[in-house]
Image (tube, rainbow, N blue to C red; front, side, top):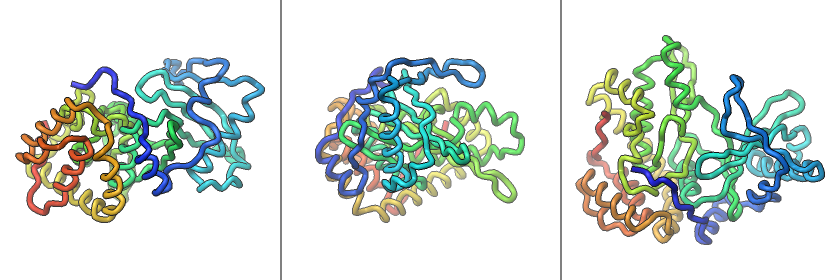
Length: 347
């Protein structure tokens, strides 16, 4: 069972030093708290007139130009290496505020005035769990995410894709989609979430990226929410297969893949992650040195997760771990072991 309200953990000074070392920390001209001083908020509706639970915020006329200019500078730091020449043809069309969830982000829509092509980025309160999740995504994922941190303010790029809960409704209307390929990708996603201990991957917290191939479609799943990076005590929280929102994907895997094929895909995912661990071993070591000393969960949750993983892997080292940092370190070290590593049963 997940906690009703996740505890917020601020970014520690050692973590800030790590982020500065690897150029993930920059000074911003406006903070998350600065954006709170808007004058008005209007409910944002989707194209069907349904409330999105986001609000479009409006700032006092005297502040609009300053706020927009500062946001464009942040976007240049995030996407253009800080080159301010990129700002000349950009403007802020809308600033939205999310009224639900843990991070209560601001979503900024930025538009190219020459061709009307737009992009989004997010400004959030910097929670340590989320920062660690973004960093592990950057190091261990084939699709690293651009993010920056300045004290208590976190900036993230937008990850484009079809949310999983919308994608599964689309599938019956798309007979050209190969269900075996979708099932394969869910098995791999399930495995990599478990190995890196990324939790709460319900269907609305990940997106599908669809790539047409010369004879078929390829599917890739990307996480878009990192608030539950090694925080909870139950190991099932780190397995997307156990959320009711994902049952359709589990059923698809059970129907179209047999046990041997599932194990093959799990082993393929472990091999890919092992390669990334080796490639990023020095940066991961620096991250580990910060992680093992950081408080990012409660002693009770750490003890519970350590015991559950010890039973799952038949590995007593997990039960002796004193921090979430030690647990994730052990999990990643196991990936490097060349002998068979126990996967998880789908279904």
